[in-house]
Image 1 (tube, rainbow, N blue to C red):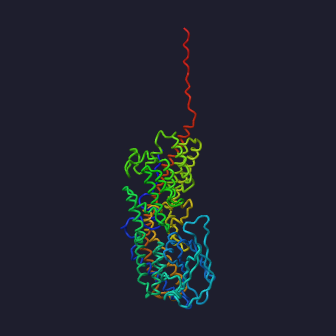
Image 2: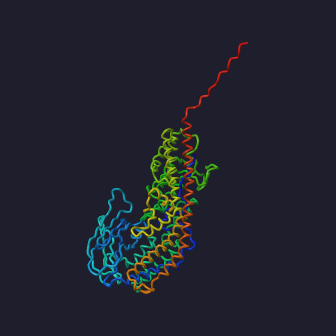
Image 3: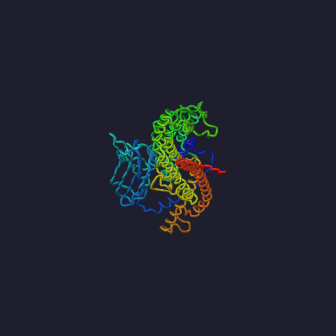
Length: 607
């Protein structure tokens, strides 16, 4: 039995999710820039109509949430004003980073009557890498505030900050379009500009462009107008072309790519530097884990099991790279150098029929004539420890699948008999379950469940966009999403589908708002009257234009997802075949040997 050990392929598969990179450049735009501008323009016209019919004695008010505490990450908040329905929001991983970088989340926005109001806020935060002993930090605010009639840029910023002696506090700053009312410790810049930066860094470019366009409409001559226009324009381009991303993220990914290429040429130094970085974000932690994993597997191929363990022990588990890290850590005990490559990066020692991408330590594990060797038996016992950790983990993960087989194989090599048979049975059951999950996943893709999940996630106003690694619903019937999001070709297809689907949904929302306005003020909306005219025809035309782009993007998304699911099913089938073959051999070896029955020749009759 041979194992094709899982090792992440080129670039970032997982990191592609957090940064939006790892996809080829130069692809066609998901939607034309003119269409994005058209949807934003329709939204602005509707907002003008809504303001025109609003009562005169009301004020547009916004609550912004920020964080100046780099060791804490906001997890969720609840905001309530007077007796209005509370607004709850749960932050995604990318949004933690956007807040830590100085962004502001516009958590509550609406019209309030002039006068005194009651504000109630709850903020829940955790440390970046919480353990069982790290309690959740909770801050509660219950206070009064005043609003002025007719104000349009009135807002309150609440920012989580360090207090000293390991404690935190909430700083407050009241803002108007003219700037802060009173100088305080919160002086990072105008809230609307920082809110636009927050949405763009959180990979919600439509929200960024929409928010900044509305802010500029209220304060066209603001000192920050040029910077806001630049962020809005970049967000529009990003909606049209999903491969447009932030330069700093691109630089980080390119640095890792260059280091991986250098490793392939036998130069591990650049990757060693990345493997030792001080990670201050989830994306940085993933780059660090990726570098340590690649270095560990590189040394395994060179026959240096001890050196490999030095790097593999630095990979977080649980974590995105934890399973392949544990798998390689176990194999490292069986790699003694006897079957290592003769030259750096070479494949000497591998049999002719073995794939070039199969690590040399697999050959060492199957080398004949070593089963009775005491050193090898001790190495097998040590390998059991990390492989046991893989039991019960994600059945779709290739490292967990191989780990289940490797564990049973090691027990068989240790002459455990029935115990090895039991673990082979367990591995076969896990692989059969994985096959069923993949069949269910393919059915969900064909029925449109996947496309609807994407839309529901990015339209969710109560949380960050759900298809992020840190926030995926790891229910059995949705576990395949996490694996799809590790594939660069799926990430690209996903981004190219998100834009037309999002714009389509925003147009439907515009149509509902227009209908509500028509009911509230029928005399103003009749015959195309009202401020700027009712854009009914524009919405209908835009919906029709977006329909073809959305359908084409969805077909491509489904095609890519189904192809990947089919590949994984074939891999799972191969592993299942290995497990069943091992069970059959084990059963055969357990039978009592057949005894040949010999018949004595009959005596010749007497003459």
